[in-house]
Length: 290
Ligand SMILES: [Zn+2]
Image (cartoon, rainbow, N blue to C red):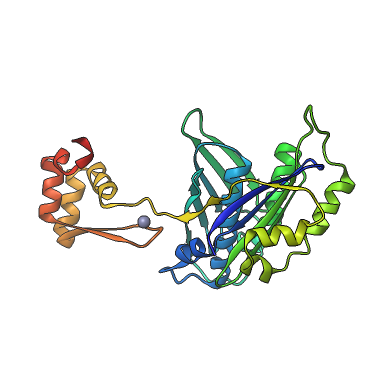
């Protein structure tokens, strides 16, 4: 099954939906990290939610959705863009004994959603992590920031990460806002989805199964993939930015410089002569310039 985002609308009810299946991207994000199972599952939910937010918040550019606070996991973040290329990482510093967000962050956690559009200004939304689940925190974010009734069903196990979102659209010239009854009808239909169905059925089958009596308009699906943006080139840039003196002091202590990507765990190793080349003629190493 392909990792993808499906967006859909209902013809007669002013509500939109999104269905995300991100099984391979989820496996890629948790690979090579030895995360506790609670952290794996949270990253899976965050991955699915971030994919949904790229479509909900409509931008061209980058998004970062970051959970932060105090406790054994001070940070979990998923980065993505409007092309649905995503990566993520969590920092674990103590024993994890709960997946309840209020307990995990000692009631002091918050979620920061940062959008960096290709054009225009960066903006941020902040949500208190004052509810046990990511779904509930996101729901209260959309209620508070946009007064839009929204529901998230985020489902994760050791192999799969998937989810569905429903949102009542604001009224416009053509259509009034969905009535509470209409919205709750669609909500009830959507809530009948079983984890196994979300994990194993194709998107088309899921949407048919849930909404076969409704008129649903499904947009072209968008592929979703795990992409880490680290590279040897970028790492060279980081070494140049710490400066020659600092780089040489690391070399004199360790004989080489080794830099690790927190996201994918790739490591980049630079010998003394690699580093000398960087500082003698940085241009020479940049193929893009020619
Ligand atoms: Zn990387």
